[in-house]
Image (cartoon, one colour):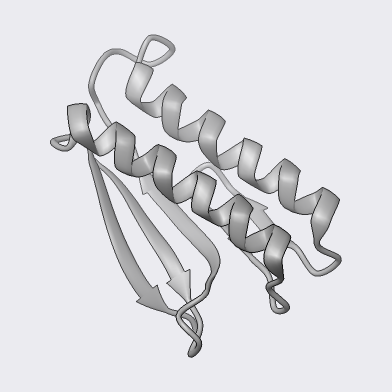
Length: 105
């Protein structure tokens, strides 16, 4: 299962995410659930790079993390797009993906 934690600040703004695990929907290289999460995550990260100066990103193939410290209108839209994509994926593949909310300290 892929576990996704949306990181929320004290103002209830999304300021990042953590992704770990594998869907195991299909064999490696053919897993459309993993592919969908990956493209949503990397599209989010690449978009954040255009609209935020403080993007912290790491992907060590075990866990992918991204966070920002200064959210703005643009980053809110980008994170909302990511969240909507994951929620859409949950509609058909909820057995393979779990979405959680986690307070960022």
